[in-house]
Image (cartoon, rainbow, N blue to C red; front, side):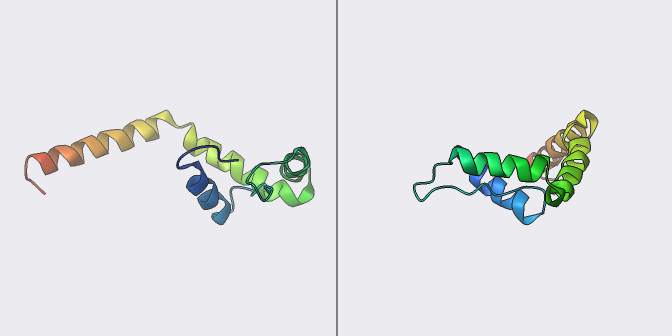
Amino acid sequence: MPMVADQGLNAKLLCEKGIGFHVQSNDDGAYSQDSIAMSLRFVMAGQEGKHLRYQAAEMQTIFADQDLHDNYIEEFINYISTLREGKV
């Protein structure tokens, strides 16, 4: 349920990749208690949501990997440094 800035785009991307679920909103963009409850039941308890639960577990291993993210940051800093030095 995106609330600000880039979260709407991120939510749409996750849904397109099959690792997110679109919570139906009202015409004014608000979410009803019923749509939230239905979505939670679908994803957390329903047989249909089993794939999403599996995908979430897979993504957790990536998102929680601090070494992986540290490496991404280090590579980015190195790349920016080479640009700054005119080596690229």
